[in-house]
Image (cartoon, rainbow over all chains, first blue to last red; front, side, top):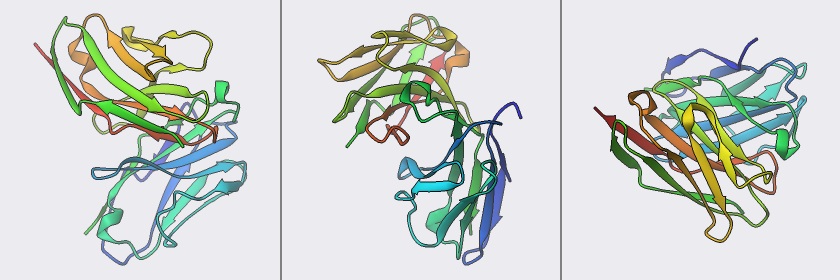
Length: 116
Length: 113
């Protein structure tokens, strides 16, 4: 596609439910990133993928959070047993290379998650 | 470790006035620096980036930024503000990890008619 797409754009869920957030990166981009944007914490790195592997999961806030990427393309971020503090905008980005000079990260529109 | 400090969470200017958004960074390695803009209910759009090729970087929409190593700064400027510039602006650093962007807290720019 022309840009990074994310679905759903908005998700309202009840505390304790599981949610899945989807990211479609720009075609051909090998690297994919998830960030979280919340009022209290600003923009935080969660995880990044190079191909299908995730060398750095250090930003995932708890073991309730997991992510996978299949076929070197689509990624899913799953939050189990959601809590109210999980409410935030989840942003996905992709980039062509890891060479810093080329590592321009293109962001999707985000998924706004509200946990009631 | 890398960090970014944006001075001023909210900046208000008049249309036609100079825009100056401040960013200071801390990095243990030569940094790559970015400015992103976020319009309401949208994702982040890259305005410009510094990758050591030139200290004065020109970006989209008339914005530019100057990398000053001695001041560890990367301030964003635009000579004349336009109403359409109203948005939130984020400075970010890509440090030793080469993949993890560390963002500042953001500066909300308001442009008054």
